[in-house]
Image (cartoon, rainbow, N blue to C red; front, side, top):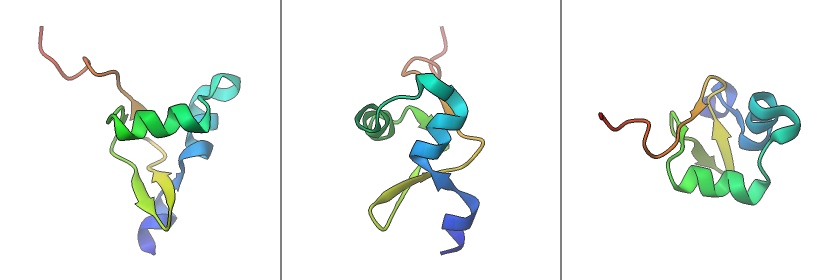
Length: 65
């Protein structure tokens, strides 16, 4: 349960990061499943939790040109 204290719900993280432009819960779940949020969110008791300093990364951000 300590993990839950160091993370926030993914929907709350999205509102903080993107404000009125936050993705829908469906889009947010797709981002999570596709690995776009780093560090990776954790599924705890059926809900996704994200580290408050997590960032959205597109699929090409880790590739070296």
